[in-house]
Length: 466
Image (cartoon, rainbow, N blue to C red; front, top):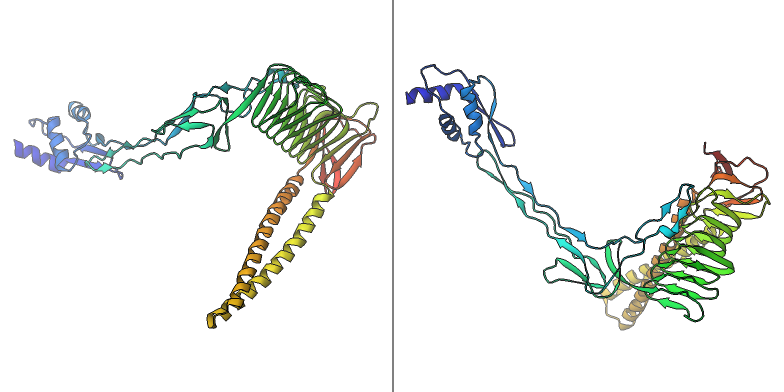
């Protein structure tokens, strides 16, 4: 009887294995009625074929009980590998640059009072935990072959300052009291100076190497300088505000023609009146009255009544407002893109670069001749001349590198300025003067409701937004 069973299986049982060797299928032909076929017989047959891993006894039993013929039934399934997970950092505090974003009101204006306070942590606070990469779990084919899992990648230690890393490399703990921020893949704990009173002549000026948060108002004539961000809850009069990061005025500024704001990031405030503002990023507000603004990116005046009235407003990429000017046709100058000075600087830089490169070529040729001479005979005088010339060449190359860096910055501005535009959400009144790159236009009676002004074929052109 055993021989008959073996003959049956050899002739009527067929094993098919997937190309990845992870699944084995079994197909059977009808067996004689007087022959007893059991699942363990099928298991032995599979093992004889080299199938040793993941045999599915329940499916083999089903094949026999239900007499499934001439169909491939999954008889064995290997174990899939599980690649390891990469290491990752869990932040235990808010690490966003600005904290909670301001609330946008129904009329489209911004409620700066809704900006959440920045989270300030004490020294000794755990701010982040590193979860190590896992090795993964190896897989096995139906033939018992091991499939190596790919281990996860470990992350390098985070760069930054203001914290220490535990010996096992898992926990980041602050060493100072401050605000935690993740910027450009650097985890930094910056010192925070909080003031809970108004800033006036009694309190004095503030100059702090970190972030400054003032929960009161700022009187006229004061000077506040923050290396990081500057946030002021109360009203700001004609004072000087300087920040390496962002400046946020939850109330706004009445500059009286003397107030100034300089920021290495963005400047935001509910309103600005007779203020001079310079920002490497954007300037954002609900209204601007008789201000002088220079933004490295954009100027956005939001809301149903978001108006730019009077002054000179300039941005590299975009100026957007609900209304420009007023019914009294007050002179309001709006400029986007680059002006002629940038073009002049580029031309000057190109000329200087050509001169430097010409000098470098001459020096390199002279050094090569000296090298050839020194190979044939020793000369201390020629060697000293060569060394002096090499120093001069190095200095020239450094000048060339710095000039190229400046030129690239100007070129980037010129490239961005090709798409500069002014967006009018509602109305641009007569008396508004537009400057787009080197082109100029004074608004005189045009229908300027809901339009965009941009430069087309060197001419300032109006395009409907509808």
